[in-house]
Image 1: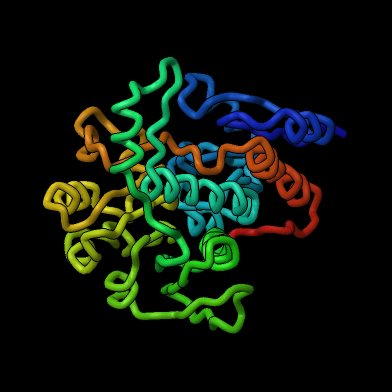
Image 2 (image 1 turned 30 degrees about the horizontal axis):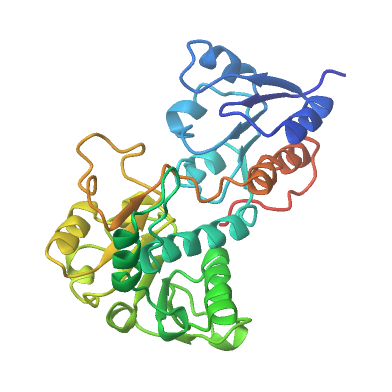
Length: 317
């Protein structure tokens, strides 16, 4: 009996890919390769990451497709309704990068609020050494309030580190009713207005669902303290970058850190380039060895579907 064909469009970690090859016939082909449509027509399964757009147009070229596996958390590049209309299951890895992204958020916080003034190739001259030591000041984290917009897996991880690791006050807002009593750390649910007004650090952990475009824009940024910072490791679309630049330039807030962009990658005219108190990184928050392998293990659920079994992580209804 021939093995099912699985099309891998954006690579995979080695061990999961080797395992998938034992179960299926694997074809590696980028979504922008001229041969992609030819391979797609044969595929019964497909493994994608961030940039492959699984929409009605793609599905129309995939008559044999039974399952799409997204190695990652966000599903906005997959039209789930269109997949279901064609009987195509969608699976993903919602808990694969929780720890990695949570850690990364605090790397940002430390860089923004505890400036280190590194030296490497040459020591500071004594006068400059003393000047920096006498003038550079950071904030003490146990005195700060972190506001978490979106108390999902990563939001909870950030709250856990903030409260139990640094002694921060944690406040949060989520579209769902998440009782504070259900959390493994002290936190207080608040309305959005209170979240923005009370936060020293506003960390965004929302999904990209319709209506979340520019969720944080000029109106919301105006509510923040002038000493506050904004961190976005969720999706670029939820934060109005131009409004953020205006708020920083006008000293309405103190700084920001972004790991995600819209469009991605950002262009040469991205409005936050060139600002000293802004950190920009190329979508690295989930890029640890463990998280990448965890995301690549979406292949397990792909094979479960192809062999007629129930996947562990089907896309939410």
